[in-house]
Structures are given as structure tokens and as C-alpha cells.
Amino acid sequence: MNATETLEQQAESAHSPRFLAQLSFWAHVAFIAAYLGILSGAMFWFQFAQAELPCPLCITQRMAMMLVVIGPIYVVIQALRGTSTTRTLSVGAGISILGAVLGMAMSSRQVLLHIKPGDPGYGVPVLGMHLYTWALVTFVVVLVFCGVVLACNQWLVPQAPHSSALQMIAKIVIWLFIATILINAVVVFIESGWHWYLPDDPTEYRLLHGK
Amino acid sequence: MVLLTVRVHGAQCRVSDRQTQGVLYVDAICFLLIAVAAVAAVRSKRLQATLIFSAIAFIATTALFLHHVTDPLGLNL
Image 1 (cartoon, rainbow over the protein chains, first blue to last red):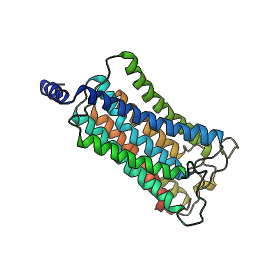
Image 2: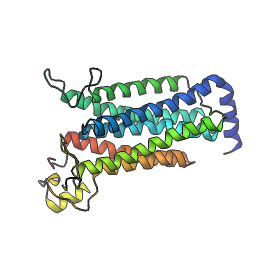
Image 3: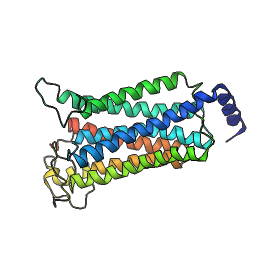
Image 4: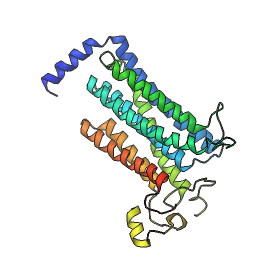
């Protein structure tokens, strides 16, 4: 890091009120935690407890959610290192926007597959909407979040709390999220067995059934 | 890997009907690429590393999705 960058960071942090800087930090941590909850809920509750196996498009939407979260992970880590700037904030928002656009394409595709009147849709609806419709809603929320962050990035450069306990909470959320990605990789492999792709309507863990 | 399979078995082969022993599953690979990108965002101090690994994960996931939608190789999976 050179002197110019340090001065730039000092100038930017001077423009970010402490309250907004901390709010921005925790908003990004909440962003990661929210998707951690969504992905864990989908996997542990719907997939394991309800035995509702995800279809190929559901899996790709999970991937898009994970790609979206790489943005806030980057932003939070930079804040924890004390190297947060408007540039790192913009990079994180950019990654999230790209992931959200990809996820919107995927979830829209699945919504359109079941849009015909009388179609029961895939899986069990939650609060009146199917999971892929909820996924579309979350991607729209991400775009709104990133729009606000980019429009107000001058005041929203995140600042990590000084307390090491609070910093640890953010780190735990991040590492839990990465663990969730790896668990998904293992689970989807068990679901597919030694096949290239999942069937359109998976009904069993093919690896466990010797397929 | 898909292209290699096409070359070996012909464009009309139905890979999903076969016991493709020793071949890792495509979606699992995508998840692993995303995990690598996330770890790069956490561990690397260089922005380029985060962007490069993220780009690889994005491209792999997009290709998988487009394959599900369009089946450009005619594998009829």
C-alpha cells in the first residue's frame, strides 16, 4: 500500500460518518447471514427434513446465490483488514450485481416453465410462492441493495468494529458460508451419483443407491 | 470434459444414461469453483485473485445454466 492510497482511504473514511460506516459493515454481514440462512434452510429443511430433492435449476440458483455473496464477503474482509475504500465497496457491489443478474435469469427461467395456469409448480410453496419465485425476489432485493450502496458509496465505506468479539462474529458467518458451499458440493454429488447431470425431477440420492 | 465425451462417444450419446465411472459431476465442480472464489476473496490480499477466481466460477455456472437451457452440444440430457 503506498502513501497515496493511505491518504485516499483516510479522506474517504473522513467522509463516512462512523454510524453509517458501521451500519454498512453490519448490513454486509447481514447480507451474508441472510443467504446463509436461505441456503441452509433450503438444504437442511426442504432437502433433508422434507425429502424434497432440488432439481438442476434449483441447484444453479443456489450457485448464483453463492456467487452473489462473494461480493459482500470481499467487502467485509477488506473492512476487517482496515483497507476498505469506495473502490472495494464498488467491487463487491459489482460482483453481487453480476451474480444477481445471473440468478434472475435462472429463477425467471424456472418461473416461466411453470407459469401456465393450472401448473402445480415444482416443490412445496412457501407463503404462497415456490422457492424459485422467492429466489427471484431475493435477487431483486440484492440489486436494490447494491444500487443504494453504489449511489451512496461515499458515505457507506464500511468500518469494522474495534471489538475482537464482534469481528469474530463476522468471520464466523463468512466461514460458515464457505462451509455451506462445500457441503452443497458434497450433497449434490451424492444426489447425482456418477452421472454428469441431475435428472429433471430427481427422486433419490443416486450415489447411495449404487447408480 | 463434455467436449471430450462427445468426441469419444459421438454427438448423440446420452451421457446421463451411462455409468460414467471416474468422472466428477459437473455441478459439484461448479460448487467447488465457487468455494475457491470465496476463499480467494477471504484469504487473498490481491484484488486480481478475487476477480479471476470469481470470473472462472461465473463462467462455469453460466455455461452450466446455458447448457441446461439450450443444450448446444445436442446431448439431449
